Length: 348
Image (cartoon, rainbow, N blue to C red; front, side, top):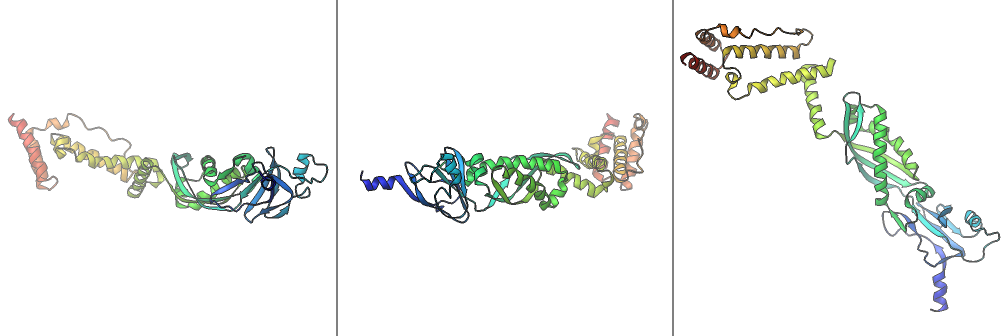
């Protein structure tokens, strides 16, 4: 190896980073066996910062500008190296460049629903999605807490760590905010405001500045959304806002009655005699009355005597059945079906 190659290998006159690869937040200048020439030049571009590290310890931090490297521009490094005189020879030190540009349009979301307390629904699980932007604000902290001595540290690697911080902070800030889910869903800016302050504090501990944070959507898991839709429907149909839970229960009871009438065999399939049909009608009337007018509903209706329908003979039941048909209170199909069963019992 010639003397020219030896000198070229050993000394560095200019240190700079062109940011050739997008998405890199931290990059170590490739020193290998090189030494930095005394009086060399450090070039830090706008949206960059440079950090000198001596034996794993941060010595000096430089913002944008051009610097001639001497003991005057490297005072902390000079103290660490115990140079009591102006150094006149090359020196060894690791140099890291950091990109301080704002990383925009970064997506966030909750891979699993976050469980929070809610004053309307007690405990709910919430999903949310949105965008955020950030930048490296304190290279010293960022180096110590996240990037370390790696040759480079990318945006994707940083965001893997930020994701966990973001989820933990969201759960904490939403859980302690006492903002009802319905208010969060209606005003997503309110939810973002609740989270952003706490999230900025959490990011700052790692040398990261939170630039923007917004919420694009907030929702419930499918099964909880279905329950909420049913509850909203109850409030719309029954005028039950005064007592939400009581109204919701009454609405469910009233909604279940038409389902019973759809059973195989129609009304006759529920009870083979007309007496069973009358009892069902009374039950329907009481349930609907309680749901639509809870203030006037009786506290408890006495149960009809079980033996009352048996007092009528089959002939009497047929006469009542024909009267109901003539008045249009039952359909011809119900009349024929019930009549056939009664005649079968009469004939044997």
